[in-house]
Image (cartoon, rainbow, N blue to C red; front, side):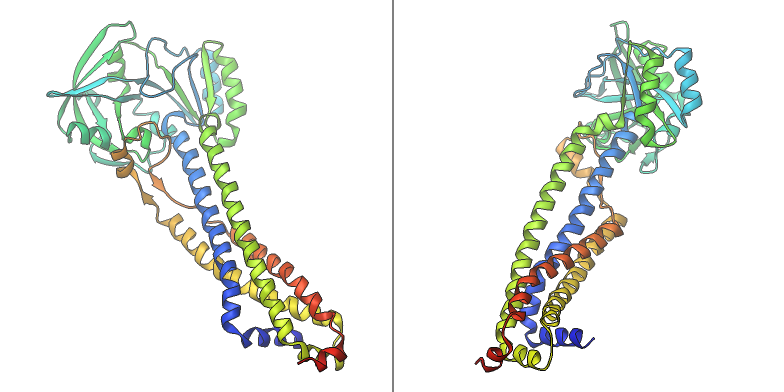
Length: 407
């Protein structure tokens, strides 16, 4: 305890120098915690967008189906045989069929190519959560040929609930079909690849438009998203060679790989900051050692051992590192926790930029993790102690007699 009190007293001798030494630790630990929270939040955003958007946990579609842009042909339908139905009924929480097609939406003289999803009003909400939806208007009524449009389509075509719209599409047989429908509501789904150029059409109406009885896609929701790869293999075997089965992991792989690169870049920046902090702290402790040569000699003459002198300077570095790490954790963790609870809605910005193929959610948020906070504090403390080793060795190696006589 005496050694610890000496360490605190020595740090308070030059508070300005101590504060400057802690500053880099405060910044480094805060950046690490906040950056890790942001990257983890974006990763979860990507996973959510893949699962809640077009895929579910597992997606089946006709083999060779195009996936880029607004290409959603209905030439091939997905054949769901009895073996696949039994598997889906027994091993999933819910599953649903969909028709994806790309009609031209027309109102007056304005025309727009859109991404349409023909959905089952009963089954679809069990597979694709609507927790983030915001609906202006009402759900479509099948008897009235009503549809939902998303904010991008509503803005570009100047649509509001109750307005008429003509949908023109190429049918399953290759003919051209057109129907006059009514907009029952404007639905913001929170998913950028839907909210820019998307419309939602009840399945019976979608089947009339494309003149087909079946569906082009099948999406399933499992008890856990981690089971998707094993289930996808069984579903692929049941559906046969005419179907292509993918998981949400496959769909999000490229974006998750990009997040991995960002995490490594963040870690590199944090390491550089903490190394600079370590050099600054080592310089501070070393300067303190040279300023207190006579004091150290007196303490050695009074019986303080070399080990105790080393401990004294290590404690000074540990105190600096602990205080700096805690302060960094407070601002970095505080911001991460606040943004985790108060997400930023980027939907309007993404809509204005035309992000029709961005498979991410419109809400930007962080993920707060106490484990990350503890790791950051521990890392800062370790760096501080290591930075103090050399100055401590220098101070302890001074011969007591020469130290006492030093000017």
